[in-house]
Length: 425
Image (cartoon, rainbow, N blue to C red; front, top):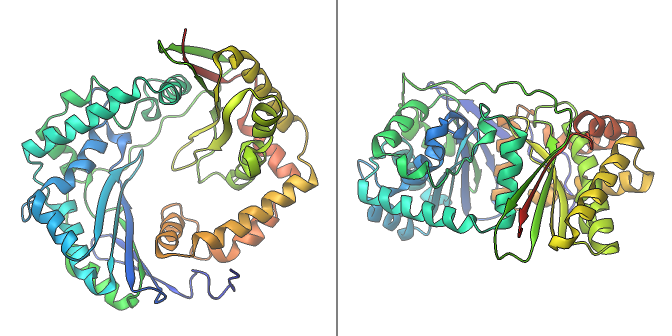
């Protein structure tokens, strides 16, 4: 579906206001469907977790829907079921995220429930224990998951113990049992509040109606003790590769995760690195790595690369699931492709194919309210500007082969990788 510049979300059709308490509200009217979606973030992610309480941010977010001062667990979910609506809250590394969807006529109810769970949770002990049990079951299961264990070992060795990216944002079998209801209450009191909160509404409602609905239920929210964002420590450059082997008896597959520290979403070369990564291990059948490691050599069940990006310098890594007998050869071939990416420009065909893919994929994200809300939220939280979507095609097509080469050389050093392997002995 083709989009004209005027029909794309931009300064001409996104309403943006900042409420008196600091909440930023953005609204995009879309009457193509009778639903409305709300999406947003606030500064309550796992970067605030102490190592001994790893998983606290995630558990706090997960417990918000378990009961408030005005509604117990059943009342919250019955209220949503009665109008066919959804509300959810989760915590990432830097931000806690919330999402809601309903018919446009039910937006006041949706925002009222969201306001209730964000502002007035009571963390009822029986519900907290039920949640703890669910988390522990998931963690116990993951101890036998070679992909999960390889990824954890990779991150723990890529980032120092003092860095928040070192620890598991979902917690561990040791830290989750130690988290108490007072811990949840203290975390909520310290980090949930209006400062830094961004809320996006997209759907069949006018901008004025949506803004006034949010204003009526959230503008009086104050939290004078709300903490600031936690600054990230600097990272030293790695000088040599490090390999970690995690033994999980009884497994028939090994998983490999290898790479280094990549760009944040704020980095000037983020887009160049993203296109380079697509050529390396995303585009088509997972790029060069998929072609060589999986298709031509048959070494892996899956193989791909990814850049995490985000608010800080997340990993740029390659992951593969392989026969244990093929681990060393797989690592060797991946390193070869990394050397190739940093030592010679990509060819014209690869560059043009990937530019075409990225500029063609963005409009597909804007085909529904959820996709539009997600894009607008990223534009606001990363400071991309309200004209980001309208300028996106030109921005991508300005990238050159040398831009991609420079970005790859900036972040990738095949002689200084963290290589984590999880599988049988």
